[in-house]
Image (cartoon, rainbow, N blue to C red):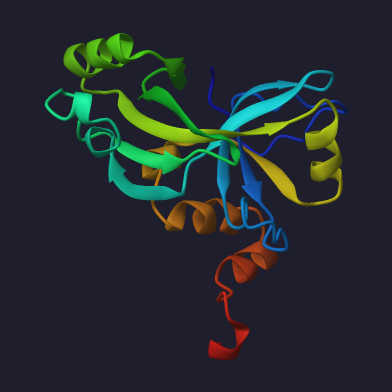
Length: 191
């Protein structure tokens, strides 16, 4: 995938695969409130699939699967990937190549591939996700049209997966109005 460093206008029928979906502050669905989704597959006809990047579980893969407690993968952080198949473990690895502006992604890899990447290339970020986010054909496009989401190009901020500031940072880059909304407290009475 090639990084998009500018804010180019979206085509009439955008292809969202390989982008970040950022929840609008008005999106109140508890599954997606203030989330950033790495969208790995998208087709207007068949739907979309991705994982939520900023919902860490505070657990590791070794805690989730005792069989991996002594392996190189035991310290791998786990995240809530989304509300679909929430007990299914999805292993994901990604790596930036800033020199040529590319992003390498392995999604849904098995334990063997994850071990190999961890052992052979320390540049890969490995994460475990329980569940995923999914949309049926046309559903994501309708939600984007309603303003529930906006697409952002992949950026080095993906390295902050699991950090609270990921959502705020991506939202604040959209416009001055979004920057204000990004800093809005959960409870307006504490403002």
